[in-house]
Image (cartoon, rainbow, N blue to C red; front, side, top):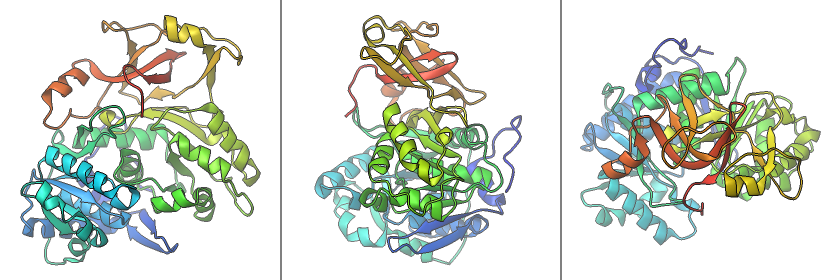
Length: 448
């Protein structure tokens, strides 16, 4: 496995990594359980061809290109091809995952208009479905992603500047209208190296596995892009397979002898309730990460109990914290440690903003530690006036460091409010206790 750059060096940018990577691969599992592999060493050639095909379709450096695909192989390769063409990918949710197709297409149209997209690349089966977006997004074309991958008539490679946009990650819209976070080449590289080296401590023999959708940052960055910096092999399952059969996640971990996986809290609850452990061997799993939404200790503990008969170790569970505005990850709990749960008096937390540790009684609130930031990054807690708070005082979480993204696309007012001179104001409430971060929720709004 290729080593990640020494910590004293500036992390290599994505296109530089693609130029030199020689080991590792993606293994894509389809709905019929068939596996197709794409060696990382072949990415430079494949991606260059996609970039050339996009250029012949009129895509120029700086253009924004929407991406919607139900095929993870196609989405990743076209994403990288857009970057190699010097354009800016804008991933949007897969249409087949949405119950209300009309509402979903309207949401996609709003995102593409906000981004000023010149084109939408869709998988072949979705092209007829999204054709109506041409009228909704002025000047945008709908391109067949499969045709771009089959094109074999050239090569294109546009070198990137470190502070230029790499892609736009639109926020989930759980608490407000979606905003386009500008993930720069520099912030992506810093976060990828932080995750691979300091968070996961990737080692020889590791293999990652995920069912997460690739339009979302945890799937796209965590399992599509960041592994390239460590030449970490990745198995990517269909998202719909997990939603239909939650037990298939851990079954795949056993089958592919995977050592690293991540998911939101709700997924661990589903997998625990639908657990089937007969014939599984989860003894190789060393990182089972949890983030992207509030973490409930009871949910993770139930998961650990459900899969212990298959050899799953509770110390593999790793809570973390992140958000699109920090590219992906901001903090990781230490590895090989059981869940760290702090019980505090609920009234003191909510009324006084103070942490008063207590036992696990009816009047206590259990808070899960999300760990510490990467080297070169800082997490602090501030009050309403921006003053730094001491440990065990509740306030707004602020993150500073090279992983912080480059602001919101075409929204200077929102950027000024959130991306301040001394860090990113996350809008999340939390506190520090013995150097570790604990989250309590949103500062002003309820999460939907």
